[in-house]
Image (tube, helix red, strand yellow):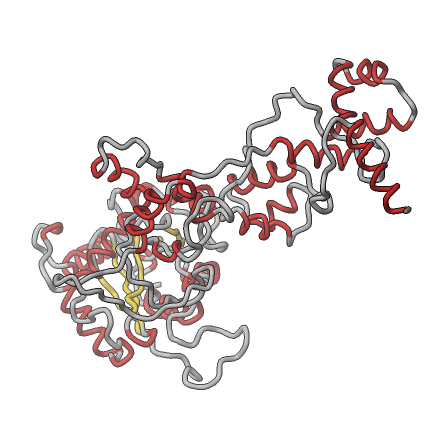
Length: 468
């Protein structure tokens, strides 16, 4: 009997509130729409999920959860509120004034709103679950957010023919020339690609843009067979949007299950690379190759994590090779948080560069430009040991170290994919001598050895010491 009376009270309160009895959709969310909008704006600025969560005032573990649920894409509009509807701050003020028994017109006067707006707000978004027309700001905001949603069937979910076309070109079976399917290696989709690279699923793997651009050609007279590439990406990345299978992101070229914000990719780089050591700060004399002593460096990686380092002088193209054998203890258990023992870790590369470059006169040790590899994490100590100014090229910009890239292409003595650790220091010196005695068109058919020797003779004739 008591439950029946309570149910009648709830139904009567719902009718008075102007809406039918509402089955509880669960607990009202703690976080507001404004906080989520601020979170995704911080993500767009390049912040990590944890940093964006702290910046918008929510708990740090909540940021990665929002990022995963959205697939790296904001599931809500980031446009500012138009002001047509009360904000959460205004709803809090309405709740406080209502608790003081203020009338509708008094509340409207203090908030600068129309009385009809306040009356509608108190009626629509009242908390009726307790059987009374109570007004609480959090519950009112919850109701307003639910009513603002526009559940709409996505184009892929509502058009089976279009969905089949998209899926066939994303994950269609690879076939041989005779039409038989070629399955490829067995793979398992675990929700995201991380860790060491593994076998990928073999599929036709058209990109979403290729699919969207091909549809008008295959169906010129069928307007229902149209979709944008962005809608395909949203169906792949955003949970619950679209009708595509969850494992289809594995067929994309990147294989990732989360979209990476564009600002995050622009700011991607190693933490030890600061603005003071970027290539934009390198002196102009290094850029125009007018002065010798500016070097470019890189690693050639071989089988079993073996490596050889290369140093190329920008003006004379003189080449020096770094011997990087495995460090002691390489075959045994590695010490936790200890140095890399493969031979091309930060400590090994620093020692090899210092040992090699200090054999040159001080006038030939002006600067060194490297890519942003972790092997140069100890560049500050290297600067102290050798007097070299260290600069780092921009990510994915090999043309900024053109001399070094060209020289690496000439090192056919050390093919990629072979064990480079088998070559001794003597072998490397012999190959470097072969390169330095090879005529170069850019040097008017002189050799790098002749060019650097002429430079050393000019230093002696001018009375400058040639030894450090």
